[in-house]
Image (cartoon, rainbow, N blue to C red; front, side):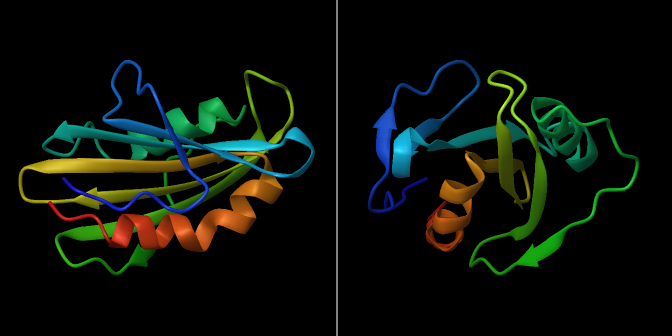
Length: 134
């Protein structure tokens, strides 16, 4: 895919299982990160991936995942919002995840970090995902 990296994002090494990773800086040292990953088929399913994200925020798994549709030009997308505590730092965290389903692949976009940074960047993050060309 091709995309336009949002203003203020800094690309960093992606790491295992990631296609791309970007960091965002906020006030007072607050940060957030955008992770992009992809899997063949449904990538294990929406619930499994959302529950993995919930675990990263110190939350128990759920059976039913609440989503909001996101309009994109190629495929189907849903948004998930989760608030919790970052399991690595012990600090409050917010996560906005967008899952894009195509005929043969699923793309996972995750914005996670300090709640104020995530809140201030959510529109740019959604526009980023909407602008991806596959």
